[in-house]
Amino acid sequence: MNGVWRNPLLHVAHNTGIKHNLVVERRLNQQNSFYGIMSEIKILGFAGSLRKGSYNKMLLQEAVRLAPQNAQIETFDLAGIPLYNQDEENDPPQRVKEFKAKIRASDALLIVTPEYNYSIPGVLKNAIDWASRPYGDNAFDGKPVAIMSASTGMIGGARAQYHLRQICVFLNMYPVNTPEVFVSFAPQKFDENGRLTDENTKRFITQLLQNLVRWTLILKFGRQRVLEVHA
Ligand code: FNR
Image 1 (cartoon, rainbow, N blue to C red):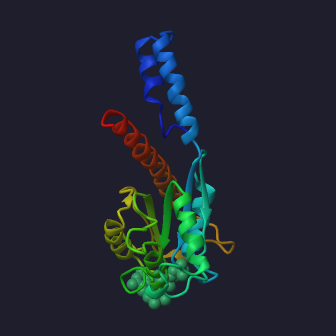
Image 2: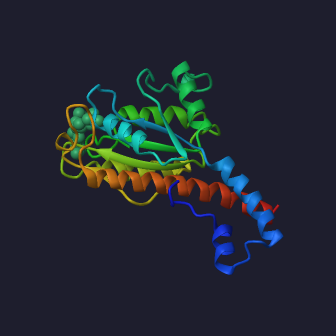
Image 3: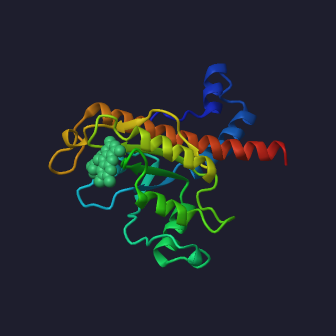
């Protein structure tokens, strides 16, 4: 992960000169195997726009390219998810089943959303509603999530992000707080091949993804430690 996550035990061993202490070495091995297991963080990314030339889809693809070494971003297209109907939530349409299964199989999520009328688009809200139901079967429960937005306007989708963060509260998701990636004036920031040209934005995306991986590890590792202590 290129210096994002440092093994704390390695750090202690180097700083105290006890590299050859057998106990420390054994713990290092145990912990390294733990980090080894955790080293491939699976992130599921989806964009709240269906249109072909979507800036948010481009932004998602840029994130795929900028993913940290030990993380992999798989994308899911929300196309084909029908309008939510509570009559069907116990046996939802196939595309919804696929979406829920992909969410559950991931360690973390990346949501990239346009802003529509100062909020998130219906396409995204609709997909979230499906995957959060039926009551007691919320696929988002406990998932770490990073959020980005791109808009043609000067606010970069900030208002939509804050609405999405509010939704995350009920979904019991754990959003990464910083950096906040708002891509304003999107048409000026992507080239004709859909590649992000703004280097500052690329740096922010890279940092956000590194923070998401780190946050995911903290939540998983921290949870395991707490369960060990309070078993
Ligand atoms: C918009 N747009 C928009 N932009 C913004 O910054 N704040 C807003 O509230 C809105 N509202 C809004 C409503 C609707 C219905 C549409 C279609 C558009 C503009 C929006 O940022 C622009 O269309 C983006 O290009 C949409 O994202 P994608 O499809 O390019 O990913």
